[in-house]
Every structure is written in C-alpha cells, then in structure tokens.
Length: 386
Ligand code: GDP
Ligand code: MN
Image (cartoon, rainbow, N blue to C red):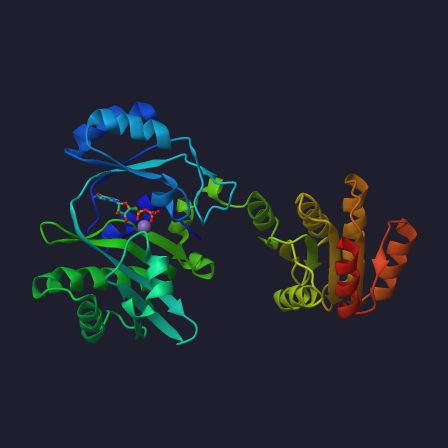
C-alpha cells in the first residue's frame, strides 16, 4: 500500500526524523491561514499524488511571496499532473502540502528496502541525491552505496558509520545522521514497510539534516498487524477494479496487456501469465478467484475482467481441487446472462467436476473455445487476439 508524502512525513516525525514544517490543504480557501502557520519567508508548494518525478512534471514549486504562493497553489491544485511514473494519462492533484522553504547546501539520497537477493534489508545511499537519482544510478553506479543489514531491535552502529562514511558526512553531522538513520530503520521494521525513501535528504545551509521528501510503501501482508494504517489509504489513487475485487474477496491486479485471465490459485495464475507470454501474448490482469469461490464471486470476477476496455479476449484456466469446475461454469453463465460481450473466450477446466462443467457450458450456447490443457489454452487465446 502506498501513502502520500505528507502522511509519510507525519509517520517519520514520530520516529524522530526531521522534516520541514508543513500544512496540508485540499481547498484554496484554506490557503489564507498558511503564512501565519508556517511563518516562513519562502514556501514550497507540493502536489500530493502517489507518484514520483513531481518536481520535473511541474508539481513542486517554490514561492517567495504570499502572492506567489497563491499563484503556485492555484496552478497545482486540481491540475492533471503527468510524470514519468503516472503514465501519459496523469493524476489529478486533490491535495497540496505547503512547506516552509529551506536553504539547501547539499541533496543526498537515503532509502531502505527489503532485498530479496541478499535476503536482508538494504540501506541505499548516495551523495548525489535529488531529481536526477535515476540518472546517477544508471551512469555512475559507483556513487550508490548499499549496506545490507539484518533484523535487529536497532540499526547497528557499524552500518550507520559505513553509510555516513560513504556519504562523506562531516563529524558534526554524525549525531543527527545517527538519529535519522535509526529513526528510518525503526519505522521500517515496526510498520512492515517494503520501501522507505528520502530523496532528497538535505544538508541545510545551517548544517542540519532534514528529510525534504519522503516515500513510504507498506507490505500489504503486514497490514493485518497495523489496522490503523488502513485509514491512510487514498481511494482516488487506487485502481477501482482492484478495490472492487478486494471487497468481494478476490485477488485482482491490473496489468498492461489485452488478455483477461480468470484463474484459481496464485501459482496457477503466475504459470498462466508466463505461458501467455511464452506464446507471444500479454495478460491484462492477474485474477485469482481462490480455492473456494462461490458462483457469485466467479460472476463478479468475470464482470471485473470485462469492465477493462483493454481486454480483447478472455482465458479461463481452472484446475479444480476443492474448487469445483461446475461452480466456475455456473458463474460464467450467470455473468454472461447480464453482460453482453463480443470477446472470444477460451476455457480450460480440469479436475473436480470437469465433465459436469463441460456439459453446462455446452448447453449454455455461449461461444466458447475449449482447450484440453494449459499450453493449448494459452496458444488459442493468443491466437484469438491476433
Ligand atoms: P519529487 O520530484 O516528486 O521527488 O519531489 P521532491 O519533494 O523531491 O522535490 C523536488 C525538488 O524540489 C527537490 O529535489 C529540491 O531540489 C526541490 N525542493 C523541494 N523543497 C525545497 C525547499 O524547501 N527548498 C529548496 N530550495 N528546494 C526545494
Ligand atoms: Mn523526491
């Protein structure tokens, strides 16, 4: 789950990480009270969307007077912000974070991730932080330092020293850096984050360390332990089909391709996507109806797939164990009765009650392309969209 920058900063503050003073507004009428609250000579107006690259896309602006603050806020609030992470359709800006403007001496980069390759956490840092970090990683990878750390109650001192040394921090900054790095580590492990990124982490002109930007993603599987975090979800930023699917107990993830897939079990779903790719196709989604879906759930799943305009063909690949194939067949028919669709549908049903399911589908007079196995099914559906 992703959250906004202002929410990430609120969390980080509780872990002792310094951030600029800021005010969140959703409406321009709230703007008048901002100068009084911030008491600053400079303001930074920041679009709150779940995507990076806002600075380059015109979603972060510096205002030197209250008049400029008005102008910048009017420009950004409500705009359709396009960045390299939003895709060409962009994102509507519904919330602004207005912060005191700080004087920057240097922009650094600091992030923490779970690293599957090293089977540990990794702290990643660079003395060349800021908006060009992707460029730095690409052109001068030696400027990115990585420190792998295990799961401890606190970030070990040796790791802090290694990173501080790699960043070339002065002795004077050691104390504030220790506090900040420990805060980040603690926040990450306490809240089951999957990513925590500060870019830029700045050294201010009066030699202090401040998190100027913050991005925090949570591991969805950890959210059961942190129910309070669920309140931070912004439904405007979520895929509406994924939200709808979750409401019905289905696992659905939108992808970029044009083949809608209905599968039972995450393993079979991944296998199905791989097989589609192998035959030159591209899945439009990952939909796992699970091991014990009802006819209603199957019908809902079918509806979700069809509501995606990118879907040019449908592949239903079910291996019935506990799940009965006739339940799937009845769900498909229930959905097909209420929805009209032209897309070709390839069906491969195997396992429990597969013959009953075949009989049900045959009687339904739905136009169905059947397949005996997964490979054949994938080939046929790829052929159908070509
Ligand atoms: P992003 O582009 O979405 O990552 O947004 P950031 O929050 O990182 O802001 C982009 C850039 O704006 C930063 O790298 C800074 O250079 C600049 N910026 C943000 N806040 C301030 C500030 O308080 N003072 C100054 N001088 N620059 C700022
Ligand atoms: Mn940033």
